[in-house]
Length: 74
Image (cartoon, rainbow, N blue to C red; front, side, top):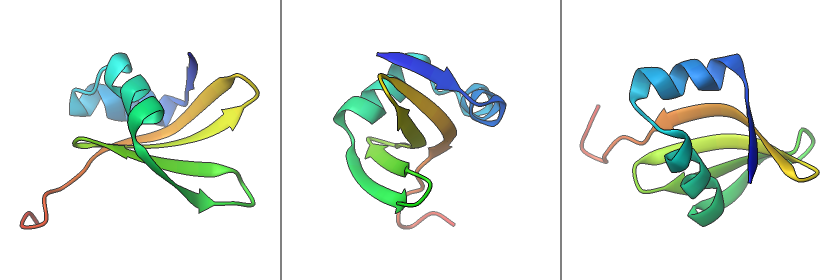
């Protein structure tokens, strides 16, 4: 799996302590839904991570990396 990371996503991953392998796992194994069909943005949720990405041929362009909050967190 080949990942391309936006500068924003790379900074977010570093700040939040999310590894490249965790991002790959989230894309491969996570529950997915379309965020924006026109732009081709997909959100994948796996464990505590949320990744927003686009599929470009055989590459995955990662736009954003977030940590999911628990229901009782603010």
